[in-house]
Image 1 (cartoon, rainbow, N blue to C red):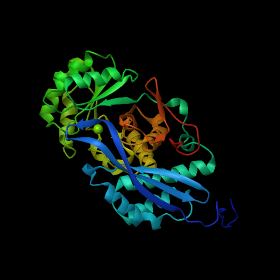
Image 2 (tube, rainbow, N blue to C red):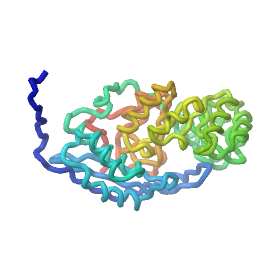
Image 3 (cartoon, rainbow, N blue to C red):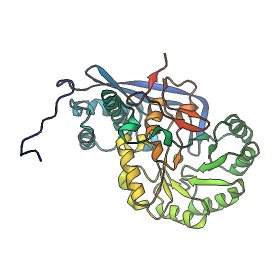
Image 4 (cartoon, rainbow, N blue to C red):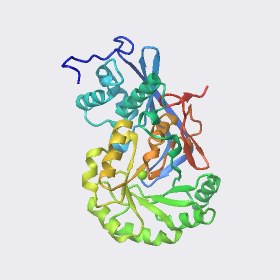
Length: 354
Ligand code: MG
């Protein structure tokens, strides 16, 4: 009851509008990273800073050509969106709605802004992002470490070198999957999940998963093409392990149409548009009884840490994109005994490694 009086928010730092800057963030990989549709040696990402009064929020875009983005499109879109930010980072939902009205798609550019807004809010409040969402830093899951496609010897060598992770995610979808998995299984007792990145037809997928079942797989990710929802369902009905979709489920509105066809979804900040949209996807997926995983692209600790803050809500985490880098320019969440550990500093809690 407020007696009909209008409430007024006290401005945080006057009417300073938020100032957005963005620069290339080129991240070299330690080893070339191969999946079923291509090989990557450098991640051409974009660093975003959002200045508000005396505080700077950090964000990152990891554009993917598969979803129609590049470093160049991110810069163009960020310039286009810079006038939509206003002067109060706490108007998060209204700002994100304005971005969506200003331009469709371009989720990785929008995610970079969303991250910087969350970083600003947390720094202004003096609390870490996970606390803003009511989560406990003690509830983080194990993360998998990804083994890209290579020779069986190299894949086994990488699996052996990754012995501090309890879960390996192995990329499949090649004619040599069986040899690759056999070589890896010979050197590790870790839990193994596989990701085909849409490489198979539904029937090929069932055959391949059946053939790989002796290696004790936890689940299979995206066995068939993104648009092949009937194929996903066919695979789910014919294999004994859970089917998780990634490329088939990008934004919240994709969720209802995959219900009943898969066991869970893999959410990525740069596919859905950032922390806020990812949180909405988690809630929506849960309401349909789906399992929830969060994954990543090749990213610095900025994006990885942002995702890690939501990880107490997950069944499965695959937040290792920073671990594949030759040198990560930022520090943030770390992995200890295979488990994600969240920073307690305000906001994202990431810092430049000087
Ligand atoms: Mg995937």
